[in-house]
Image 1 (cartoon, one colour):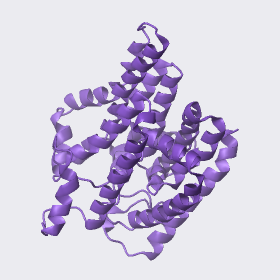
Image 2 (tube, one colour):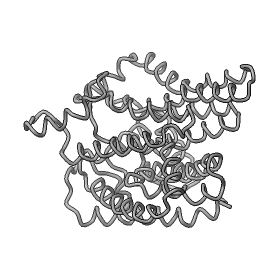
Image 3 (cartoon, helix red, strand yellow):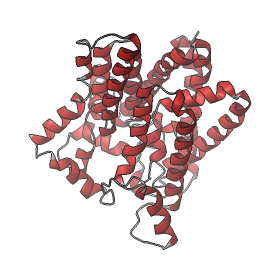
Image 4 (tube, helix red, strand yellow):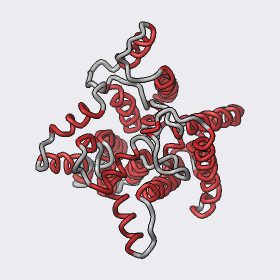
Length: 374
C-alpha cells in the first residue's frame, strides 16, 4: 500500500532536509553571483530563473523583454495562490507562493509516478522504488520555484491517463505541460504513439478519443497567440537573444557536447559557462544515454519517443548547461532506475548514498550562486 498520507512523512523529511541544507549553505558559503540569488535567507532555492517567474507573477510580461522567454502557467499559479491567500488575510511573499506550488507538485508527481510504475512493476515494487526519485542529485530543484515539478506532474499525469485510456484527460494534462515550458510539447507526439500502440495491441479501430490528444499543444499555441497580439511571436526569440545571447539554435546536437571541451582547452573567453557547469552537463548526458541504451527494448514505444526527444531538444540550444535539471523530468528514467534496483538490489544503497552526496553538493552550489549548476 502507498496511501498519500503515509507518504507525507518521508516526503516531508526530504523537504526539510533539502531546505535545511540550502539555508545552511547560504549562511556559510561565499556567494559566487550575488545578482542570481534571491528569495531571502530562509527561501534560498528561489534563485536564478525563479526570479523571472516571480517577476511575471507580480508584474506580468510588461517591462521586461526577457520575461517572454518564460511560459505563463507557473507564474499564473503563483499569482493565483498569492492573491487567494492574501484575500483570506494570509500575507505571504510571491517566492513562498512559488515554493509552496513547487513542493505540492513534487508531492503530486511522486504519487502519480508510483501509480504509473505500478502498471509495469506491480504495486509493491512501485511503492518501494518510486522514492529513488528524491535521491537523484538534481531532485532538489523540484522544491524550487521552477517549472520542473509542475512539468513533471502534468507529464506523468498525462501518461497515466493515457495508459488508462482516458484520452481527453491525457490531452488536457498535456496541454498544461505545454503551457508550462516549450519542451512540454514533447508529450504530444508521445501520446499519439501511445494511442497507436494501444490500438494495435487491442486490434481496435481508431475512435473519436484520439481527438482528445489534440488538446496537448494548446498550451503553447495559446501563449504564442497571446504573444502575436502583444508585440508579435518574434518577441519570444528576441527575449532569448537579449537575455541569453549565447544560446544559438543548431541541428547539430553533438555541438554542445564537444564545443565546451574545445573552448576550455583553447581558453576561449567567449564561452559563458564554467568548467563545472560543462562537466555536470556532460556527465548528466552520458548517464542518461547509458540508462536509455540499456533499457531501450524494455520501454514502451511512447516512452522511447518521450525520452529521446527530451534528451535531444535541450541540445538544440548549443549548450549543456542545466542538462541535469532538464533530464530530471524524463520520467521513463524512473522506470529504468526502478528496474535496475529490482534486478540488482545490492546497487541500491551505494547509489542512494552517492545521490544524497550529489544532491547536498548541488544544492549548496545552487543557493550560493554558482552559475551553470542548473
